Image (cartoon, rainbow, N blue to C red; front, side, top):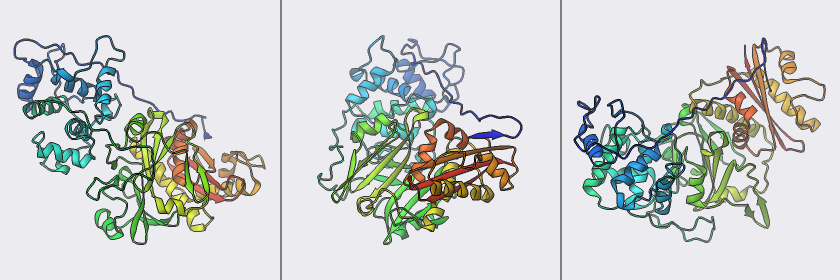
Length: 492
C-alpha cells in the first residue's frame, strides 16, 4: 500500500529490454578496414575473425570493438570458429536457439540469458573451460584459461587480475577465439555429471574436489577465524532460527553476505548479491533452467525423523536441493525472467535439528529479522543501482505495533480492526511524510524468505524499489500465521 501527500502513485519498475540480432557470418574477401580499429589493441584479432567469417562489422564501416557482447552472440562466434560442431540451422526462431541446443547437447556451461548486460568475462571463462574440462567452478575456469595460455588476464595473469565481473567486448570475444584456435583443435562434450536428484545416498565427494558452494570465498566447514581473516569483523551478530549465529556483512550492500557460525565453524551461508558460485558454474543471475539442468528438480520435502516437512515453492519462486551434506536453496526473481537472485545454504545437521517449521519466539530473533529485512531491502536496491534507505526508528515502532496487533487479534490486513490505514497509524505516531507506503507479510519462517516473497510480488516490489527515503521494520511472533512482518516506508 502506497500513498503520497499531494498525489497518489506508485513508483514504476522499468525493465530495459534489448533487441538482440545475430551477428552476420559474412565477411569481405579482402582484409577488413574499419574506421575504429586501426589503432585498437584488438586490431589483429578483429582482422582474423572477419576474414575467417566468424563475425562482421557494421554497415557504417565500424566494428565497434568495445561494444558489449551477449551470450548468444558469443555462442554464435564460437560455433562459427568451430564449424564442424555448429548445429545452427537456417530459419530457426529465435535465431540463437540452435546455438543453445548445441551447447545443451554438449553440456557446456551457459547462462541461458540473452541480454548483453547479463554476460561477463567470468561467464566466458566458464563456457570455454567447459568445452575442454567439463563444468568447473569460476575460479578453476579462470585458472584453466590462464594456465592454457587462452588469456593473460585483464590487469594481471591472476584470478583477480582476470576481472571476471567485467563486461565482454567484441574485441575481447574475438581475441579469446583466436587464442583458442591456436591451441584447441576441437570442442569437447562435457562429461555427464553425477545424479542431481538430491539423494543423501550418493558417495561422499573426494576431498580434493571443488567446494560445492562458496560465498565470498567462504564455504561450509571453514573456521570462524578463517571467516574473519577473509572478510573482517562482521557488522553485527544475529540470532538465527536454527540456533547458530549469523555473522552479518552489510558494510557494502553490493556485496552483502550472512555467514552462519556454530561451534567455531561455518554451518550456513546466505547471499542475495553477485558474490557466490557453485562447483557447477551456477552463480547470481543465471537462469532457473540452468539450475535445473545442473541439479534436476528441487526436493518436494525434507525428512526429519519420522516427519516429512513438505516444501511449497509458490509460483516456483525458489528451489531447495540436497547437495553434499547441505540443503541449498536458490531464490528466483520472477520479474527478471526467473533468474537466480539469491542463495541460502544450511548444513544438514543444522537443518535437521530444527524440529519445527517455525522457530521459537525470542526477542533476539525478532530484532534480527527486523534488521535483516532492512538490510535485504537495501541489498536489492544496490543491485539495481538505487540508493539505500535510511533506518527510521519511528516507522519501525509503527510497524512493530501493527505486526503485534495482527498477531494478537489474528488478522492479516493493511487496515486494522479499528479501521485505521497505514497512513492513519503513521500520522497518529507523529510521522510527517510527503510519500509513504507499507508492506506486510505473514507465515514466512525468516526475514530471508519474507524478503524474497515481497520481491516477487509486484506491489511489494514497487515499494521496496520505490522513491521513498526511509524504512522501518517491525516483526511480531504469535497468531495463526506464527510470524508477522511489517515495513513502513516514508519520505519526510
